[in-house]
Length: 86
Image (tube, rainbow, N blue to C red; front, side, top):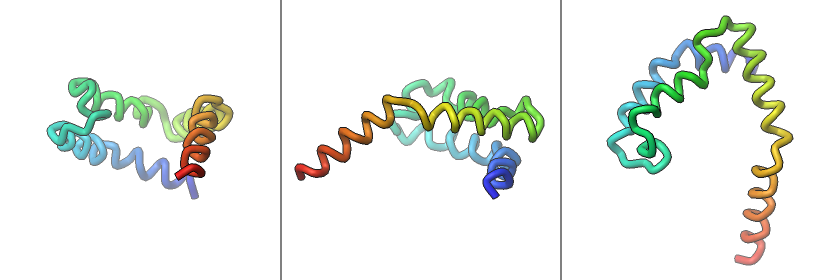
């Protein structure tokens, strides 16, 4: 099912790009940081240059490498720890 969802998202990449370009004027910090590169970076993440099989393989590898990343796990640990003391 996830495969279909990713392929469907890629097919609608232009909709996501349009939404992000509309949000540029909203002064959202992470989007407004590099206004001229935001939409291009988003489209680069969809890997429109690859066929479906290669794009899915790329996404799977990206997810696998992200799962083992230490920094997000440490951040989650600190976040949960701070919530415990509220």
